[in-house]
Every structure is written in structure tokens, then in C-alpha cells.
Image 1 (cartoon, rainbow, N blue to C red):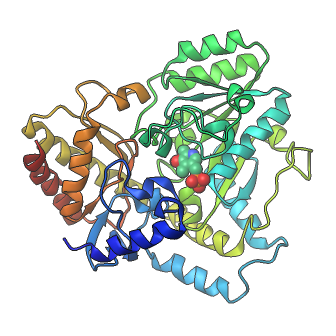
Image 2 (cartoon, protein in one colour):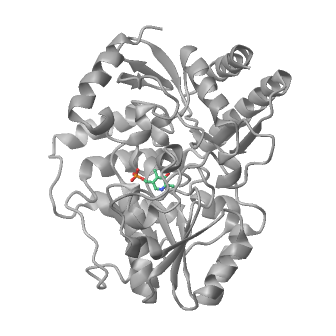
Image 3 (tube, rainbow, N blue to C red):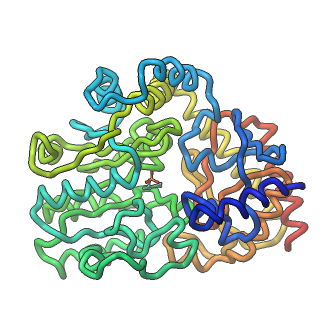
Length: 429
Ligand SMILES: *Cc1c(COP(=O)(O)O)cnc(C)c1O
């Protein structure tokens, strides 16, 4: 496969952009090799600057749930753009977006739009602190909630991929207010809460984790967190930046039937435009400025182009519930195919999966938290990644990321992916 144009763009990019990329995982640092520079994408396929075509399992890390350049979304953006790209004043579109989300998601009485998942999570934590008058938060090892200071303690995604233990630039004061424990370890949470009486403002969690591969909450874990939060007046924040509008219209709250106090969104909500949101129960969200004194603002928040893109996509997902069902069925089909060829290869493996999130771990043991994800044979994952890429299958370039399926994938694409896995395993084992 010729990637000479990507190679020369990567060299040029490094002269002007740190590491040549605007978000670290894109650099392929953990899997090695040259990141592919993309020229365009359509449906389930990415095309790089050398004209190579790939079946895409990243979907821009989630948002392109119906595939790239999805026509109704493109058309809506084009129609809106001629009316100006931003006003800095309210629009009816923002109300429609808020009403639509409220009609889909449980426990969202009030919702504020922002421009990224990071912003959504850091704002939700600020609201929880303002509401409770407490400083500390609990997060889980391997969960990623964006790059705000408080979250860069034992974080997942790129922080895990690059094995960064402490992030220079995050002060000890901030880090000390972030307490961590292992995902799925309810007793550890109970211990932290009793060791820090009346000090915990919030527990924030990826209720189905996707930033250490895909990791599912054990039976009773989320329910247990809900109870701890109720007993101790702690705000339970579900970070649904990955899972919202993907695992169900109402995200994990709906899929697993657990109520959160605050919820954060990103990714799918903007259909590929920079959008995030945080929302939740009225008595907590009433703290947000200008209603309350917890200040939060954004020049481009609720931007009309971003809103029309997200609104169009979410409306389609709501009106055609069969879409998420089709996507889940495709993911299950892929899982069964991958299992067949992995089993035949004799290599130890674990596939974690829920809805349209899936990850393959070369592990002999169940992968239930960050430690077990990190203990897998991630060197083998690296080889698998490149063997697949050479066969035109674009997987996330790290074992610490979930794969995201999009509904433009055909069963033929899935069969190609399964066949490529079979060939790749023969090559690398
Ligand atoms: C991607 C992600 C974020 C951060 O969102 P950005 O838009 O990249 O700032 C936060 N939480 C989760 C669970 C994510 O997957």
C-alpha cells in the first residue's frame, strides 16, 4: 500500500503542529507507523491522500453513526450556512435541540449546550461542586472525561495509550481533589466515601466505559453507585459522551435502567460538528448561570451550524428506532465472526461488547477494569492493527479504545473485516 503522500504530510505537519496532530491518539504513536491523512469520506469508507480506501471502525470516535457525509445532515448544514455561521444571540433551533434531547433522555430537565465533551464534563463537575458545596470527586481508573485538569488522573484513552502517570501542568491541588478507584470495584468506592465524609461532590463515570477498550459495568455496580450517591448526597454524573444516542436514544440510563443526576453528551450529539452538552435534574441544573451563580459560558455554544447538524441526526435516530437495532445486529454479527476466527487461531482473546461498541483484547483473563485491559498482550494488538490496516480496515490505533460501528457498514464490509482478521492472525501469530 502506497502511503507516500501521508508520509510527506506528516513530516510537514510536525514542523507546525505539536507531534503533527491536533489530538494525540491520531498520531499512531502507540501502534507505530505513519498516521493516514484523510482526503474525504463517504458512508462507511475513508479515503486517504494517496487514494487508498478503508472500512472505518472509528467513525470520528463515534459521531458518524449513520456514516460519513450523510446526505440529510450535509444538506441541513448547507442550508443553514447561508444564514450566517454564528450570531452570539439565542435562536429557536437551540430550544428545539433542548426539547428533542429532553424527549429522548431520562432525567434531563434542563440542558446547556457547549462545544466539546471536555467542556461538558468539566462544567458538570463544577455544577456538582456548586450544588453540594464540596470539593472532591471520584473517578474511575481508565475512564476518560476529556482533558480538563481534574480528569487527568489515571485517565483512559490517549493518557493510557501513552502511559502518562502524572500530567505536567496539572497542579497537586487539583489532582488531590480527584480520588480514583478501579472500575467495577464498589467496595473501593464505599471505602473512599467513608474516608472522606461530606467531602465528595460527585462520582463521575463512563457508565459503559469505552476509553480502555469497551468495558461493561458488572451486575449491580451502577445500582450500587446510585445507592451510595443517594445515601451521601453525592451527585451521580454519567458521562454519556460515547454512549449517548448510541447504546439507546437515552444512552446507558435507558439501556441499563439506572438514573443519573447529571449527564454529559458529546460525539453523536453533534453529528461530527463540535458539540457537547450537560444536563440533568432541575434542582441541580438551576445552579447554572444566569439562573444560579455557577458560571459557565461559551461564545460559540449552541452554534447554529452545529445545532442543525446534531438536530437533524438526532431527529432521524428518534424517528427511525430501527436504525439503532440494525446497528446492534451488525455489531453482534461482527462479534460472532471475530469470535469464530479468533477461536480457530488458538490465541487467547476477550471480546467485550454492548450495542454498537466492541473491543478485542488479546487476553487470557476477563477484561473488567483498567488493570486487566493493560495486562492484555497489547504488542499483539499493535501487529493486528497494522495487519488490518494493510488490508484496508481502519481500527482505532490503540487497544485502549472502543471500536464504533456506523450503520453505513454493509454485511459485505463486515465479512471482509472478519476475513481480514483471519488472514491477519495467520500472519502475526
Ligand atoms: C471523547 C470523550 C470525552 C471528551 O470529549 P471531547 O469532545 O474530545 O472533548 C469525554 N468523555 C468521554 C467518555 C469521551 O469518550
